[in-house]
Length: 483
Ligand code: ADP
Image 1: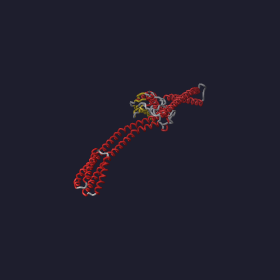
Image 2: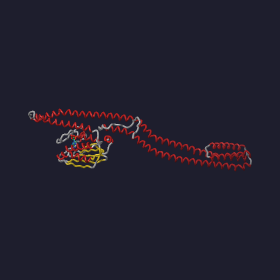
Image 3: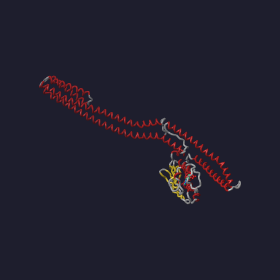
Image 4: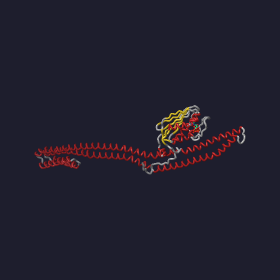
């Protein structure tokens, strides 16, 4: 799938953070809205119901005060009682008007209207009859009915408070459920977004790391292409330019080596033939000292020729070391072939070979793995004493194919363990009996194993003990190279 990236890494980071934060901000915003709504509801439903109840209770109290002053006026007929009655009535009317202006239920509103009507009737009665015994007799009944209506209003108010609280509770439960389900949906969404952006951000960085490692390991065959934001793509193009430069340098180096070795060969052949002629006495008899000098010349020219051939061989091998011709290979068969090819020196030295090989198949370059094993086995034969044992193991270990080659020779000095993989390095403790090599075998082994993304180690042992491992499955770079 092709992903469209923004122009810069910074924009990718900003977009990533914003998108990941979006669901969380949405959740926060929704929560705030739900709480705001709840607070509004409590204000509306409970607060106003409580206010109405308080006003109803005050109305009930003022009805009692009204009754008291009216009855005193009816009995005593004094102006002070009439004034008190009027003052109480003004308070009553004010309270009734306040109640009218409040948010009331229909029942409460009709109850308030009925109280106002009844009070108006009582007031008319008092005005009409004045302070008479008849009025004293009628007032208790009139006020009793007014007080009953007042009580009914208080009761309706209490009911309103209860209903308001119930409604609030239901709303609170609904809001809580809503927030809960929202979180259940948003947390995985946020996690998926975090994972996606982590992938998007880390992918180009991983590609850059892999490309640089590939360059370091000398894998120049695969063009470098970074998928990501504009600046990372440009960085990829720069790395690819670097790769091309390295390919050119590598080719120049190989060409130079080949030319040099070739050019050296001709004078060297003349030198060797000359020393041969001298040594064989064809051009005149030599005394003992002269013969010795001719022998040294002859031996060294042979040694030099070997080195130059090694150099030519190495540059040829090195030129091949940047690609893999990989397929599924049965590794046990490769071991058998390598041992078979070395039969002559093995028999000549009376060496016993112990094979401990499991059925292991791996996706690798068969020829290169054969060369690796052949180098290890030929070294083991070269450095082993006569009639000793060489053991070869092959097994699987957590996705890797592992070879071990052990011999009973002098082993490798700890100070040499890192250096023996360098080109042209020959160990310090090499026994005199061993034929001098070019010091290239193990450097080729290491190069080929690294090409398979594997590694080689030298283990402790009485003799030499090499272990190589590489992944059995296709790795990305190989897939593309093999394609
Ligand atoms: P050479 O052609 O000298 O064998 P290599 O690269 O194959 O070059 O090996 C490098 C050095 O590692 C050798 O000179 C030798 O000192 C040491 N070495 C390699 N294999 C063995 C072995 N099986 N036993 C002892 N020394 C070894």
